[in-house]
Image 1 (cartoon, rainbow, N blue to C red):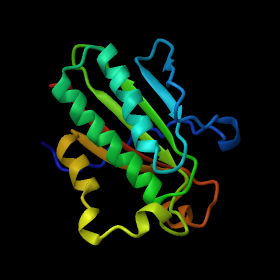
Image 2: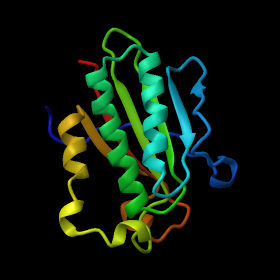
Image 3: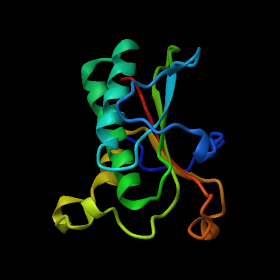
Image 4: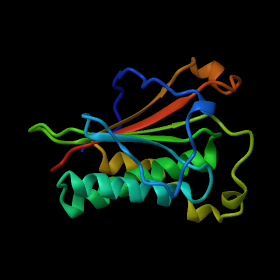
Length: 172
């Protein structure tokens, strides 16, 4: 495994929050001809489960092995949970499955930047019940990173700034 590395990837074009429908129980629709999907998640405690269901369906349909699907589900769940607990809406999950010989999965979770306060359902959790998500993602992913569409010093003060947390997983 490679520890967290910096890799410059172009930030995905962020949809305007008002233009993205918020769904949690509606199945995600794969992007045409890309081997991926994009889904706006309902911001709240149900978001990780909705994300896992969409990812499982996509990777099963793509022929992934169950063990690698489980790794991908854990990475997605951690990234989405971190966004719900620590960031503001909107919350968008983007996946791209590499169907070539190298295989792999790119996971992007885009959020609205740092939240003014912690999500109420997570704020009362004991300290030993959280705090390991980033380590889990780093252990399972080949590469991880964060991209902001505003300079880091401005992101917390810009209500329109979107933050993209991403991970790349290999098939094998």
